[in-house]
Image 1 (cartoon, rainbow, N blue to C red):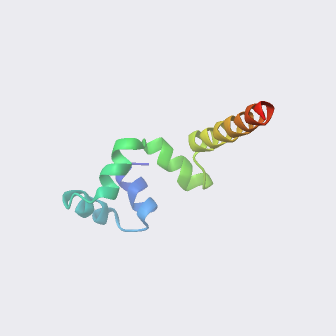
Image 2: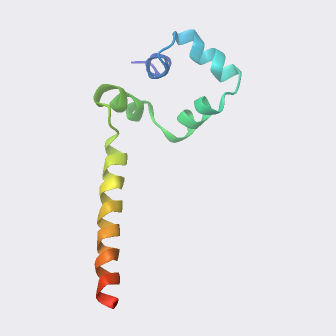
Length: 75
């Protein structure tokens, strides 16, 4: 799938709309282009999830639980 097609699916718009938004320097377009690969966006479109973010959420939960255990041990 082309990047143009991926973006049009993500925005639920025509492919030309993506280029118009890009020319208008819309912040959402630059954000997506800067921090996400085409594969990241396609993964989200196909599964409704982005595995890298799911992994980060799991790590965060584990860190919070570990911190709670440490703090509980200090009291």
